[in-house]
Image 1 (cartoon, rainbow, N blue to C red):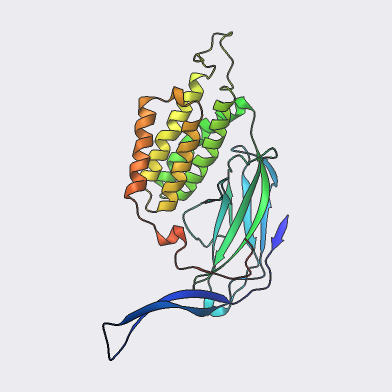
Image 2 (image 1 turned 180 degrees about the horizontal axis):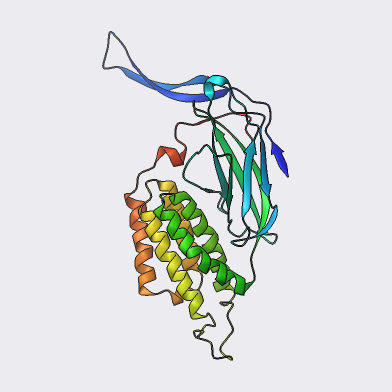
Length: 287
């Protein structure tokens, strides 16, 4: 499915100003003025495929094409994202980048239909942005496939973090955590005690609990290297999802890693690149 952008409006930003009187320098007043910076990007398309997929198993491909802007405002950069149930945005990589497409796993959608709102933001060199959203379905895998998928993602997350792309690592962590929480809330998905498996007394097998511990430790490690509050907040969301399922089975190490996340959030200041500071959005850009 294709989604196209509306006609562009002028890009307007508010700037803070401070003035003082020449005759009375001590009299200082402040306020804001509107600055017209130009037009935001326009005329482009946003595609997502597939529109119906399985979380952590299928790769969803996001692509933006045919976006235009005034010559003085080029080049354009792109940031692909999805929206958490809280309404917060999670990006598929760190900040805005020049590639016009990306493929990634998505977390479980929300509600009975497992729907997830996804989007793209396009920014020019002035800081004007446009955005388009779409809705996909990201459904849970089978319980057995879910544990295999989470296990496969653990090494990938570590590799992404080591490459310096904490945004992509956290995005995959969120997808993994949503599936892992689904497994834990479903009773672990593994066998039961009748066949001699190593399930604990609550019916959750040890493999699922070990995978959760791996994800908690990875989240704490990735978020500790992040330099912006958005990444830290993403990590907090992951931790909340993982620790909220069967909290009585958390280990002491899980608790320690969770507390380290809280400390990282306290000690981190916002980064303009991820928070979007300094960008100016057109009034007609769709929400």
